[in-house]
Image (cartoon, rainbow, N blue to C red; front, side, top):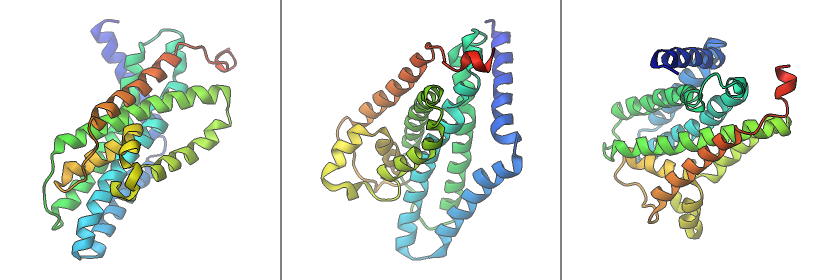
Length: 253
């Protein structure tokens, strides 16, 4: 594809993604992705002015923001490959272009949610610290693994349509199994092993380190392994796109 055709195709894909996830139900999207997170962050941050509240809610808020990026990357990102798979089947656009369009909505929402957290931080007495670049690493791990998991979920839905009903429960399980609602130290003896096995564990702790210098230490090589695992998940998902969908003929006969 020529550069002009590539930009045109990307614009059309982005427009389609936004229409499906945002413009199709703008009131619902505004409430779910903007108003509700804003209300929760500001309510929790100013409900109690004690030191414990100001020391705890930012760590929880930024960890939830990273997990939401993962969840949105699965549902609003990787699943786009299922809805738009005929593009790849007919070789209309390359996979990387569709991937870029699929990542727009979850990454855009991540930017909005992260901005809400930082606005609340500026208005609170929470001590400023940490390295913002670590938050970007956290977002990269969450988005990459989420996009890959979403593609795999969409492919599995082709073979087992009922899997679509189980996906929300699996995402909820990922929230429970990842140290989002509790500190990493709560895992005690299995902390190091779980961080090496679960990329989201590293992502949430990196996000905490992005706003506070008092975050917990990760085991050696955990970040490198998390990046490798998230990349492997995405590559696995992209490789499955080469396999024809069993429902493709019925959907586009």
